[in-house]
Amino acid sequence: MKKPIFVIEHLEQKIWKWCFFEYKNISKIVGKENVWFTNLKRGTGILRKYGKVIRKSVREFDLEKVCVLDPEAKKTLTPKEANKFDYFVFGGILGDYPSRKRTKKELTKFIKNARARSIGKEQLATDNAVYVVNEIVKGKKIGDLKFKNGVEIRINKIESTILPYKYALVKGKPLVSRDLVRYFKK
Ligand SMILES: C[S@@+](CC[C@H](N)C(=O)[O-])C[C@H]1O[C@@H](n2cnc3c(N)ncnc32)[C@H](O)[C@@H]1O
Image (cartoon, rainbow, N blue to C red; front, side, top):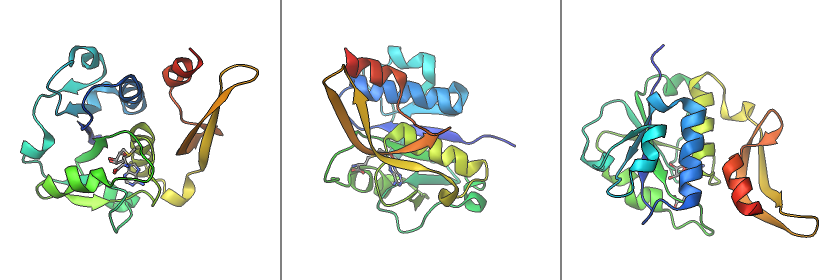
């Protein structure tokens, strides 16, 4: 079976460290040959190891069989439908509370011929959203997957920090990139 392409439309001003760690994790999750990073005008060098880097925005492409992952979409992605798509487009957007609904405003409405689908009402980090969609493509229903709200990263014996997002559990552990954990500890 042909694997779909996971398109990450970078929508932050810079490739912040947090974005970079998530993008690296995405490459690890689905394989670099299946990842496109789009809308990257500057600082592309560091991402070449992790996928195809494209200066153009995905808005300028004329893709077919394309699904945009948007927490505001009315329909939820199912395994049956997931198999019909060749491209899944995600916002390279960092989480925010309350959500500014940037995916809908800056991405979904600009992608030609796309179906918008959600993978639940709460926002996940982009790497987690990619993991979930990849699992759905492999046949899992969203209800088969396990999640945890809020992850605590212990910095030392006294201090810790809480990441206030929803994380997929992989083998019982929240999917947080090791680089991000190391970064917080530093
Ligand atoms: C951290 S989320 C960004 C959410 C952001 N607050 C917004 O304004 O849309 C990063 C990306 O992951 C994907 N994503 C995260 N949670 C999702 C969900 N529940 N349903 C569909 N896509 C999701 C979307 O593609 C989104 O652009």
